[in-house]
Length: 298
Image (cartoon, rainbow, N blue to C red; front, top):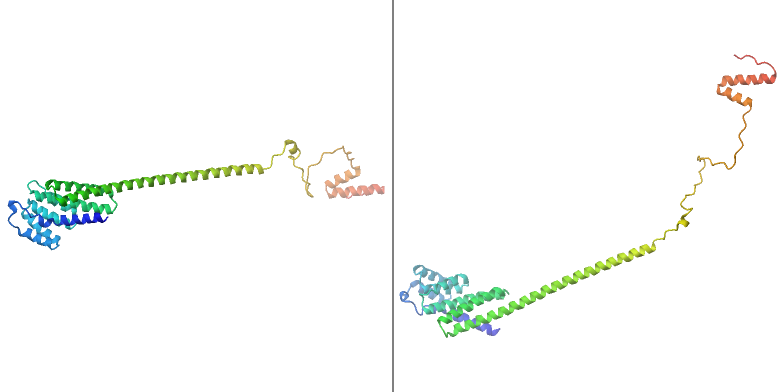
């Protein structure tokens, strides 16, 4: 780990020192000094990339097609951490009409911009995107080394970018394997859970069946028809006092009642015809007993 930090520090020192080396060899049309470029270089030496960028922007407005000014602007943006705009400016410095040293420096700084952004993504465990940017850093370093063969700093930068690509590939592989294991573990846990639920369901079903058998066993057996004979017909309840009951059939023929005496029948007839007739009847009866004719009472 210390070796990697040392290498990264070397890259930072080598690449960030390009602000002053960008003007080592200027094209003939830029040999005349530009005041804005000079102000920007002084601000960079003082550690003020923001002030330097303002000066370089003024120079770029006067010299829009100057690759050296584009390189200066890219370095100032890179030191501020604005990697996207830095790459736009650095790519403008790689045009064919730029000098070999300007183009080599531009590719070297492009490699640095990709490397720094990739390192930030790797620290967030975003290994897939980090790999892509480390590859971009490696490609830009190769282009710089092709333009300036044997440059030790560029060779080291290229080796470091290649190493980080391999590291991120390995981390991505381990992450994918761990993810696969986690998915398999989740599937296994789910299968075990489903199996446990199935066993619980089977156990519950067995308990229900056992309970049904026990209930059937405890249920009294039905009586045989011959045992039930004579029990289905309910016995007559004893009649309560005063309650009318149907007459029982006579076992023997009872003797017929004899008729009433004639006198009793006549008395009943007289009584039915009113009290007056009944009194007349009684008078006749008294007269008959006294052997005399009854007096008229009407």
